[in-house]
Image 1 (cartoon, helix red, strand yellow):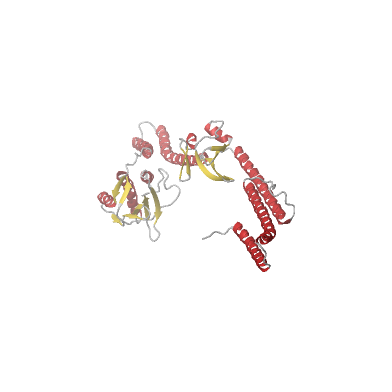
Image 2 (cartoon, rainbow, N blue to C red):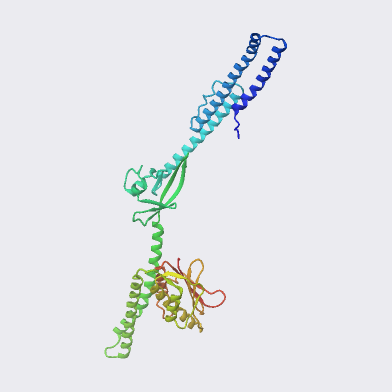
Amino acid sequence: MQKHSLERTVIALFTLPCLVLLGLLIFLIVHFKLDFLEGTTLIIALLAPSIVVFTALYRRFFNTLDSVAVQLDGLANEEFTVWHLAKYSAGRVAGLKRDLHTIAKRIQNKRHEYAQNESFIFDFINELELPIIVIDSQSQVYHHNQAASNYYQKTNLLGNDLTSLGLSVDADKWQLEQNNQRHKVVAHPLQRGNRHYRLLVFVSIEQSLRHNEKEAWQKLVRVLNHEVRNSLTPIYSMAQSLQELPKLTQSDLQTTMLNVIEKRAEHLLEFVASYSKLSQIPSAKLDSVSTDEIAKRCEALFPDVDIIIEQSGKITCDIEQLEQALLNLVKNANEANLTANSSGVTIRINQTDNWQISIEDNGIGVDLNDNLFVPFYSTKPEGSGIGLVLSRELIRNQNGELTLTNKTEKPGAIALIKFQN
């Protein structure tokens, strides 16, 4: 298919009248019976000026178009003078020149505005106390603030690559390869003209860590205060009473008091040992275990428990630590049933998005409060408050999670173990 062009169209439009004029001249030559010399002279005299004028018009027209193209190319390259069309002071080309001048002025103003915005952004970055680095398309430092220099303990970071900064990126997620648990890197796109940059902000998570540490210490102090005070108060009271008793009298009472002191001291030793148990959970030995194998081992451990496998497959877990968690959870379920004068515990294995093992009882349910997984917090008179916390830590050690909920349609609670696979 032949392509259309302005040049071909202009030439065709001029050729048509020339052909008509040439035909008319030939008719006149034949009609007046002019000889060859006379006919040639007539054709040259009338046709040649038309060709010369057309050629001049053609060049002037397309030279003007070339000037417009050069001017537009200059605007694209941020050259804002309109000198290519300076010789035209009237007519449509002059109007086009004015339009191009207006466009150039607007582009220049926008460019100045963008430069001011960029300057403001970089000045603002320099004033921030957070370490900030601007990375160019070659993954090198284009700009940084003083906080970034202080962070890396270097005066000038310009030109440094990601490796030298201890930075890595995977699927647009930036990470610090250094052993730094106090900052995380947040990336934002930044564009300057046709150039693309990345704004890397080193966000401090110190405050969040301190808040979590404060909460953990508050819970720990609350538990220690409760347990130690409950043990020391009667010991102190009985010690005073023993001092006030007459010698060689009330021997039975003395014996009772000494027994109580012994029991409370023993409780404190168990209390400290329980904390040690929480902090010494060994690393999980993960393996792919079939649901049938888990069910068989549960049947051996819990002969009175109903075990239901809704989906069969393999679960990645540490079977020994899983059994230890299930021992605690089934024990809690049986105790909940005794409180409600009911019976029946069910272990259910199924898979939705993840593998799940649920332990269901028919008790009165659980009090879902913030202290549920606080060490040594227990709603049972003789409860140690360690079994539920230890069970959750055992499950988390296997990349899982343990949650407690109440049944919706009937009394009872559900302890749900959810694995990642």
